[in-house]
Amino acid sequence: MAYSDKVIDHYENPRNVGKMDDSDEDVGTGMVGAPACGDVMRLQIKVNDAGIIEDAKFKTYGCGSAIASSSLLTEWVKGKNLDEAASIKNTEIAQELSLPPVKIHCSVLAEDAIKAAVKNYRDKRD
Amino acid sequence: MNAVVNTPIYLDYLSTTPVDPRVVEAMTRCLSMDGNFGNPASRSHVFGWKAEEAVENARIQLAELINADPREIVWTSGATESDNLAIKGVAHFYQKKGKHIVTSKIEHKAVLDTCRQLEREGYEVTYLEPNTHGVTTPEMVAAALREDTILVSIMHANNEIGTVNDIAAIGEITRAAGVIFHVDAAQSAGKVEIDIDAMKVDLLSMSAHKMYGPKGIGALYVRRKPRIRIEAQVHGGGHERGMRSGTLPTHQIVGMGEAARVAKEGMAEEALRLTALRERFWTGVSGMTEVFINGDAEQRLPGALNVSFAYVEGESLLMSLKDLAISSGSACTSASLEPSYVLRALGLNDEMAHSSLRFSFGRFTTEAEVDYAIEQVERAVNKLRELSPLWDMHQDGIDLSTIEWAAH
Image 1 (tube, chains in turn yellow, purple):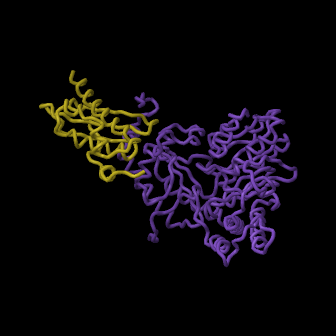
Image 2: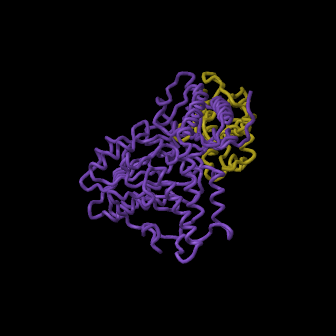
Image 3: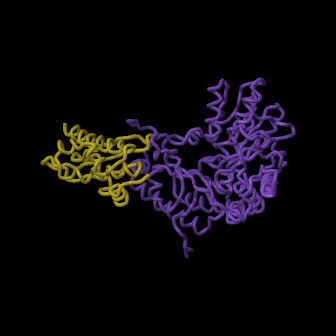
């Protein structure tokens, strides 16, 4: 399988790898996928008082495209407010990384991950 | 001190092998005008006679590898055709006797798809489930035999996990029951000893390119005593005693013969060397935790190992190991997203199947290459585990099987 240069770059040098404290009120966690399907993403966001995502971390079990999709996503969501972050579309990720058709599901998973993280943060606050 | 290795390193000998230089030499003598280029079927001139002599010499060489009579060797295009010829050939010839066939779930696709085709033709097939070690036992075969069973087809060594079945013990059962026994030996011929008499095998498929011969040539052993009849699948000039028509490719056949000779000559020694390399590799990578051998640890081909690295995914692991030519048990690179049917038949859960890699060592593998591979694998697995949320959870003592995953 030929990977695009951007996928390879994110895979070789993943951005924002890590784990935040789940119990922190300012942190929202989204975990999506299943080991049986070959990919699991955990995306975490730290939101400041102004409602802006000031930090994001991820860990991903999956193929190179899944790792790249989540790594890219952490870059994109930083500095955005929650609504902006939750409106990121999988097609934008797929396009940026030039994902082939069989890898589109990786970008879908990334979109699900940020939506889940935002929801988790909001649920905590409610 | 590290010896210098040239990358990428080829560790995929179960997939195919390079042609041995001695084989190349023998083959090139059978191609051009000043060589042995004739049609072995030409009876009217010396070009044909010489070609026929070369073909018959190769037949002896291959027969000697498996302790057969040269007249029991039928040349084919490869093990896939041999499997087709053996299984369809027996099924069609003996259909009045019965229409039941016994095989296993982890046979090569050449056997499984042939059986599927026969099912469409009205035959009934029992697919035995191997034990968790990847072995199909004689007891399983015995229990599956029926009055109308005409054929048992069980592989000698498995192409994905490298496990080796006890063919002689299965042969005892089939011979006693009067059932024809076919063995797919594509992965074992030339690597471990095969004695078709001691093993009571009736039909045996072989491939040249798995034993340092060329691609595009294989053979089917067909027993003469007691005589096994098969219906031809390729019709034409009546070559190979009518069992497989088509002009014999002298250079390919000579290549397979020479490959068989070279393999037989050094088999015991090479098996020891490869077993030592395999052990060296396993000792190296099993230093990491949560690393498992798929298939029986002992009952296996000397140079083959299939390993699951828990909490990392196979395709990304391959991506990190671009200096190593290996293959993955994860079929994520294909459109299906289904992990290997072989690993699943062993009872592996999907994530362990997704995280498996097949390493196979061969004639040109060196200790330095194995050491380099160990280093690379360790580096890649550690890197990906650092990236893996599943590894985090495992470290935190969370049992992943208790989590309800949202399947997608």
